[in-house]
Image (cartoon, rainbow, N blue to C red; front, side, top):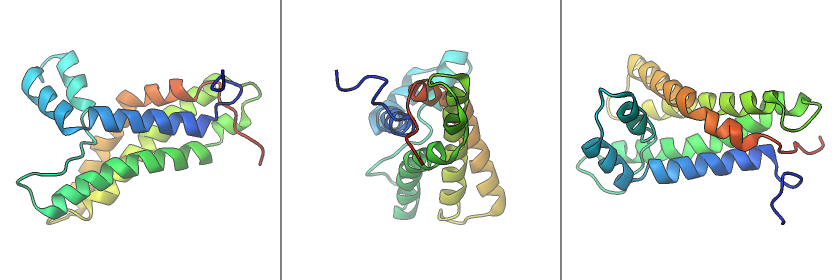
Length: 163
């Protein structure tokens, strides 16, 4: 058993969970399925569509700039999740692994990562505006708020290492 809690790092586990969320639920196949088969006026349909927020794609009728921005946003969500998991002190200051501070640090890291990724990529889209960037950051924060608990659970019990 090489992958027990004794050997799991909190930033690594949270980043892996973020990568899986973005790869699976941001894929073009899932995005199309969610758009065609869910009801946006129901709670379940809304959540299934929300999971598809950091959508990545290879081809579309959109401009290259829009496709690049969407793909970069998906990549930045994962990278920034690692950065914030590493920098947030909740897990570092926890006396025992598996405490609620690790859970909330993981959750918060995903909220911050999604909001910042959306803010940065909104500025490289076609016809960027400050209002559009702020609205995109709000969409990212909404996504992180309602899906970040998954990252929080993934970081539970991980060690922080020595500094």
